Every structure is written in C-alpha cells, then in structure tokens.
Length: 136
Image (cartoon, rainbow, N blue to C red; front, side):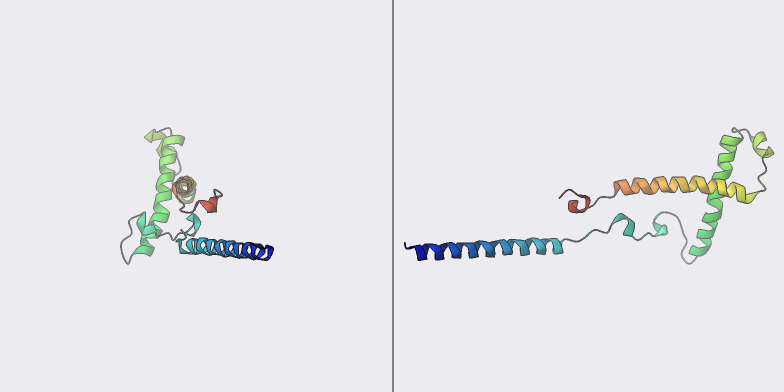
C-alpha cells in the first residue's frame, strides 16, 4: 500500500466517522422532538369543577356563595375554637356582627390551607423529562 492510498483511506475513514456522528446527532434531535413535552406545573389549566361541586349554568352564583360563606364559616369556627376556647357562652359574647372581620380571619385561614395544598400538589407533580430539572 502506497502512502497516497493510505492517506486516501484515512480521509475516507474520517469522512465516514463524520457522517456517522451527524447521523447520531440528527437521530437524537429527532427523538427529542418526538417526545411529548409535559406541561409544567404552573402552566396547567385549572378547572374548579374538578375540586368543588358547581351546578351547571349556575357557576357564577355558586362561586360567589363559596367565596363568601367558606371563609366566614372558617373564621367563625376559628373564633369559637381558639378565641372563645370552645365555650358557647364566650362565643356568644364575641361581636359576630362584624361580617368583614370574621370573613377576613377565615379568608386568611382558607388561603393558608390552599397554599399548603398547592405546595403539596407541586411536590407530587411528576415530570417525564429529567433533563429539565438538571439530571441530564
């Protein structure tokens, strides 16, 4: 084998290796494109009907009732258990005529529970692609 033939064979091998590498890259890119990207936790669509009872065609009314009654009831229960000490007589001495104060107390309690629930749901959310969280 002459030197020219040997150089030509090396060139062919280099060209062949480059072709193989480019084929591998395009296959990897194709696999990444074919993977269905999972929606991030924050980009999910939220439908309240999945979590609370809402009659059809009365969504607005139901949401207003839930928005006003649930925090008020939570605030009244908090006042009964923690402020009045669970004693009905002490509870009746409290001024429950101030709807907005009781509602605000309950709103804070409900908001804290909802934030905690969202945090737990975030921790339970699974991602398909490990590369997005730094394990790749």
